[in-house]
Image (cartoon, rainbow, N blue to C red; front, side):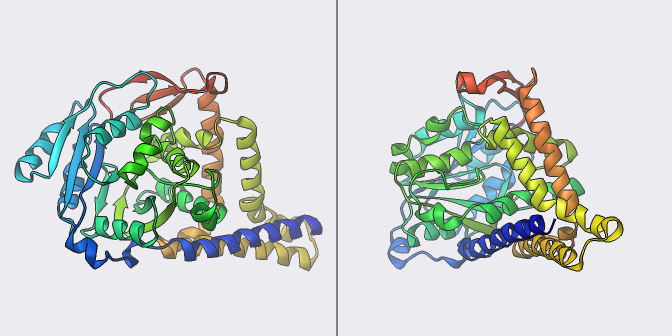
Length: 401
């Protein structure tokens, strides 16, 4: 038991060190400013928004982008077979601002997933030297484009992904959504994301990508990831595989997004991508679930057992307490960094349990006949290893992405 606790504590300490280094490297785009030569002669930037039944979000998103302090932009919105008022809202805005253009998308093409197909079509209409892909449910401060562009130029990069501040309102959101930043900053060495060659060390979020247009085309764009549920992760891998420079940034002071609104969306949303994150490998997901339980749940379970039942030595109990303090410190720093509820860090055992159960559900759903389901589309990944592709089962046109 003593050796076991030493091993867990040591690994948690290494995770903590990696987390601290990542916090330093996870630069906020707010810290960057455009050079004078770019301000004098700003290149055209195309802002590309795929929209599927987004009448509740699209006006707010587009208007926030119209107010950017970087003026040489075009805003292209692709209406992806919406049956609500998405197209009408965008068309009305376009009459007031010639920079806004509505594109009516073609029907979903065989072999493609919806968002990839929409983004691919948008890229064909874009005239800018730089491309920004952002989601319809995001909200942007007026200097988002200029700050993101400055971060790309200052660091001499070919592409970036900027992580928004995730708005979490309900208890279910608060227990799950912060896991995204927790996982990235705890386990992914950002120094390797920036400097390591190849796509193994890479990550990104589809809510905001920026690419040099020629780089996007050379790496194959969204066509290179057309059948991937986690198209954002695979885009980040693709750009690095092709030898281009790429990095992720903190955009919590510039971009806001509420990913999910209720328990059902939380479960379905995370269920959709957790199994996909392990490339549909059940064994790898099992190892990850086991490891996550050992490192982030067991210490909280073992402490009361050690104190009340087993009566173990003081040194084991002390090490157990150190393990818990390391975990809670990571969570508390994370919440402070992204302006969350710091007291929620004390609910780490509940948060971990949420994610473990959803991970199991992701595997079970993926292996079922119905497949994974997310906002109107069901995906059959049961035989993905054999077919090396994702089969689209159903496409309900009355629900957004």
